[in-house]
Length: 396
Image (cartoon, rainbow, N blue to C red; front, side, top):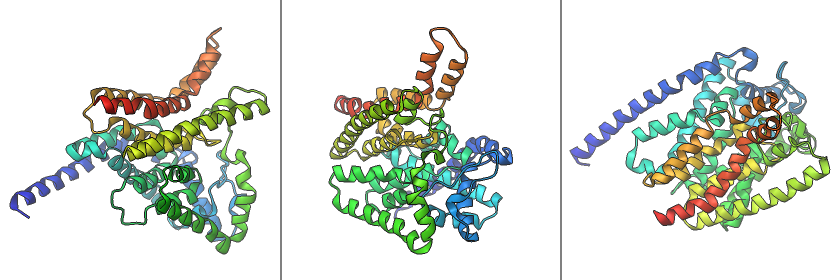
């Protein structure tokens, strides 16, 4: 290594140190807001995770417990997640909050690093700092910190598995792990199937199967309770008609149609969106654009799921990376800026306010459209990635 290369590395080291300080300063207000929130409102989902682990330590049924009022939240994840959460339960509540929050930002950094790799290859580390701060303030990411959610970790796992050029782990293992922990990443098994990545699919299925069957050997009653009881109760996840449910089903439920009609329409739309989205993901994979493929599959996880809360839209970070590309197309940059702004502001809650305004002839219809804004936006993003983005690539 020449002396010049050593000097470059030293400059890079100092640059990354400054980047870390800049990002820490920028996210500090957000972290302070939610880690100093009222006790019963602070990182409530992290409290659920820790409680699942604590129930195992205490030898109590995991799926019979609800967190104290006013939340009254049950543990809703597969039993392997409760086993992994034992580590959190062993920590004090204060320590767990800081460890988990730091983990959210590490997972976001991994996601940003992979999602924006083409532009970062030329412009890191300062562009990385900008992108980190911009993504932190997306509403789905803000909610990761607010609730202490796991979604951005699952995004990082699936993205790394698909986008790493030479992974040091067996490719497919991270998708299998994510699927075993929260089921919805199982859409990536469909993606691996339609793209004929047989070896990766085999590893993902194997990892998911092992981690799913393991609890039957260790905590058999809890495993049975989840798969044959808790999993079949959608109300355990919360009010399905709530504004925060931005899945296709959530949007349809808020139309208050007869149940059979709602279910029939849901099945038809899910089939159509699924076909369109997975076909687009296959085409992106064949075009050697794994970021767009992952972004599409992530959006499928949100839209096709019966329940998808706003924080599940953490996949928007990957969508932004797919749109930005290598950063040379100004049109794509402007579109990415628009998508970013849309998911920064609380659009669905504007819809709730509009409905409450009772403006004759406008309030209800327009209010419901705006209330479903993030879900409708996700549908628009699917079209953008499948039909618009390939045209921009050809123009560029």
